[in-house]
Image 1 (cartoon, one colour):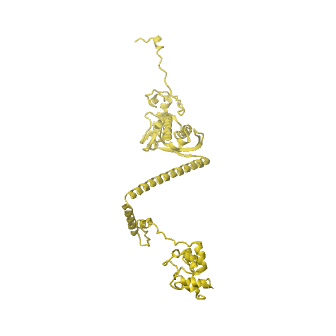
Image 2 (cartoon, one colour):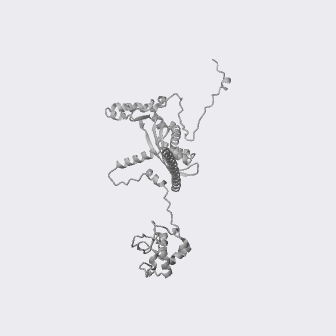
Image 3 (cartoon, helix red, strand yellow):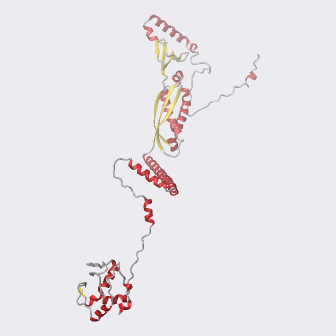
Length: 414
């Protein structure tokens, strides 16, 4: 088939697309190989004449120094290790060796062991300015492992150290876009985002980031005090609301209980008996039982009887009687004021001051009387003696005898 150069100049291959990331450094290699060709595939063609001569001499030396050379040629790697072999500075075909036994040529081969176990390191505390302008110190822990021993040896000098430095910058970049509240509450999301970013960045190094954990977020002391005061105030407010709601529910329950008891009076008696039963179940002690309210209700509803007060003497009659019968009037006044004063020596009662039995007006004219009022003898005139002899006998008034109102006022005035 004829190949026209004019047509060939127009068949330009499409440009390749390169994706650059701020976390992935560009790796320049001197040897360019096809994508399907593994590293070390064309090593046989790159030795040259000097390389082949040195290889032959090394095999001869091994042959003549047996069995001593066998100890130098046989190497062992563990299950969790891999050995990357270089011959004359070039990577051997077949990739990393292991686990188990592998052979090397002493003079021309070198190897490097790579640990495939999960490793961890702590990210030092980073001073980060959050999105809401709060300075915090954040540290983290990163867990990673070597996924490809050959790439980790050939593409990066120290995979662990490079991953550690990259984790510090990634932590600052990610947390710089978060607020303080998001840092404190969304740690899991921040850890997942940081793991994804680190895993993509370290993939060309043959490193697999397994897990990232934000270890601690330290706040300034003043900010901690302010947040603690705010949280305490919020807790006190919630506690007051809860107490108020509890009191409201208790009040409603008491109201419903009162309505039920009002509808059924026997419920109060049952409650009273239940209380007595619960008290009797306790240890021996002195118990004062309250008097049932229902027994007192009948007494509380009764009205006290009205006491009829004795009629008081008119002033005119009192002045007249005081002149003629001072002992009797003073006894009446004493009975009205508070049940009488003085002593009663006879059967006349407590109405008189110092009366001895029934009082008769005729006794006033029979000379000096032995009955005294306030220590003074009662003297009566002749006219009074005649009046008393004509008047019927009157007993001293008391609570069980005739009152003063039954006397004839005309007779008393006379």
